[in-house]
Picture: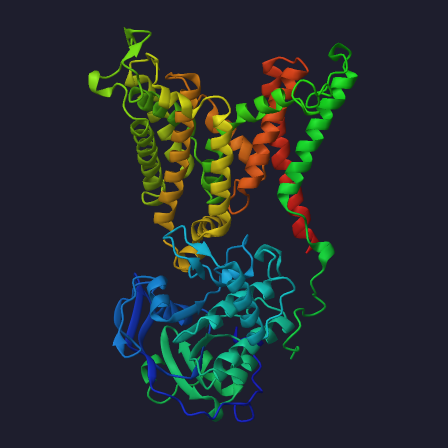
Length: 276
Length: 362
């Protein structure tokens, strides 16, 4: 994938936030995942502060998605520690991670096709008018209103929120999935290739939502192949290579060419020599 | 950046002409068309003497221009299977299938009736008594509870194997199909169970099955449309993985779906045995298939996530009108079965065509 990257972009000119970063929200120590003999992830030490947006880059099979899957509890790690919000955590599944405050937008969209936008946005955490256990009465009006508010806030344009998701374009669906993440203020948002299958305009919308998250001071881990997007949106770039972190670069101090050199293995940052 | 207030991007705006009418409207149209077809046949076929199926302009008979007697029969004959189809509808919407409902009707009828017998029949001891003296003339609540608990139990077993043992619903309920048929024959070694108490006989007397059907249809409609339970049922049928990721307890929910379906089937058994004043081991034959057919005619998609109780009720009406219509134009029962089969296949073909067209339009 390195071949189609724009390498002439410099981090110096790119817009970046100067807001001070908060305390550490997520920290991994020696995070490791082996699939049998395959060392998909090896000793990843990573920190993320409140309000910080970090991109994870790397070639295919470098361990980006594996890294994310360990954090969100989709898979069980082989070794290592994850400290989230000050406490060591061991999520049994994505649901537990979500309940703890980690919202994830997966490559495969977790949307119910036959339901409309408010239904999807509030799936699993519906607003309730009367509480009657499993037969609690839904508050459709409130959910529709909050959906409109959320879409407006994130700048997502959907012609008819009452239409079922299956009738929408890939971009609109992605926007719904991301708007869902943005609606419920989470402690950490993770997006795995959110714009991989989208057109120019739809990508712009998704990026718009990410900026909204930045303004709201919500931390983000963005897995992306798109150099322009990364330079535009994040504060820091962490590069993975063959299952190891090989560089941790501040956006202001790097440029596209530099990042690609780390991705392809031409360069290895000091302190990460064991990844070479 | 696009402006923040208007909803519509890249020329995409809400176009009312692209909005399709609800599927239930199509089923309703089909119902009207089928009625018109039978009315036309009544005028065309030489041996029919210009009779009408649903109209009777001699309003001295029942005070309306409708043939109320026939309309009542149409609704009455679909209402018991209709009760089952309400439960089957939510099972299919959740992405499953329930084949066990027909035999469950047989088994539940046998068991329930055993708790609803009178001691004396015309002054003589009940010749069909199943249990001893303690089981005679029990309050009507006892057989009702026994039936619903039995249904809930069967549903829970179905649900357990489907949700926890991850057996395909088709196989799990097919197994239960045979088990229930076995139970219904084993219960009295094939003997019918008869002579219920007056209180029990009231449940299915006259037009009571219709009252139950309509009442339960309204209840199920409200549940499916306005409660968390309904929303989650649709979500699971639509995308089970997404439902799980969203924090829905999919396994527990599936068990509930099958329990409710089986409880409705058991209630149908109560109404049926009460209406017939007897329970027989062979009761409910093909009911599971008719119930599925009603749902499918009503636009419930077998792939899950799509359909409604209103659709199923309309589907049941289509079912009833066809059955009654064939009798009305004096065609034999085997033609009915053939036509019914063709209509079920036709309904699914039409529905899929409509889905594809709707998908192509956007």
